[in-house]
Length: 302
DNA sequence: AAGAGTCACAACCGCTTCCGC
DNA sequence: TGCGGAAGCGGTTGTGACTCT
Figure 1 (cartoon, rainbow, N blue to C red):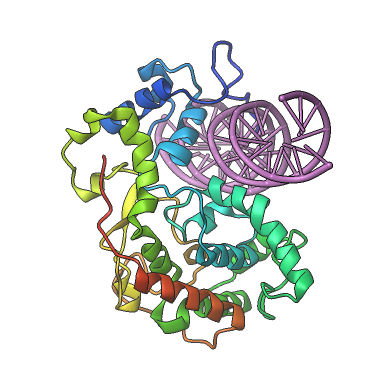
Figure 2 (cartoon, chains in turn red, green, purple):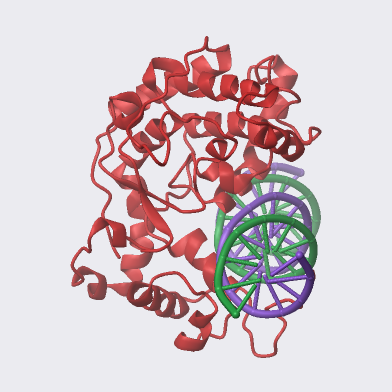
């Protein structure tokens, strides 16, 4: 289709955001919600393009973002999902609700790629299961692979393949990536980092705002609460977590039962399959984390 | 102490997808 | 059904911080 870039107008500011700009953006979003990005620069007077505003919000200012210090379990989830889904960072981020796709992408490019190469050279500790085609590297056309799976009907070979992969991923001890992410979400210190970002900016303004109802968390249209994780495992720990509407579990789009479905949220689907060594390792890690982390309700800023 | 090299991550660019008309 | 605008997404770049020599 092709269209001119939205940011090539004169007078559109680029580069790092200033605290003042952040305050303006956060204030606007608190009042109007994060939809309709095009109106943001117009309404706020920010000399930024709508896209830049959206990115700043989703990658940095949005509440609930966990920054830095990826745990070994998060690494494991990323590695595994990358081997399944390829570089579909938004999809991968849907399994780590507190991480942004940009963050995961950066972490992959700067840390995990190297780490994997090293590990593979040392004896393939991180090597994907035998059933997983390709490696976690860049040589395999993961998107094509995933698309093929997505388009397969519910009884096709692709479906069978990905069911197996995902069931392996979620099967161990009733754990799931969501549960693991929830355990991560229970770390109050990790949450504080992004709360700090905003609360620093808004100071007493934020403190004076009463907490809104859950569905209004930070985007009434764009956000829905993630189910309590016990809907899948019966052992949920997080009271509430949030993800954007685009952050549907990626494998569900492939027709994969991820323990529940949208229409009938509380129907657990059991996909039991033997764990490969890597999954076992992943969930051993997760279990330790979940048991040790203290859970809390996600503070709601908006 | 200073310059070069490397790393980490925020932000940008441009293509794709979605959706309303 | 096709078009065009808006949002989403992934790849890439820019730059400040850090480390090494």
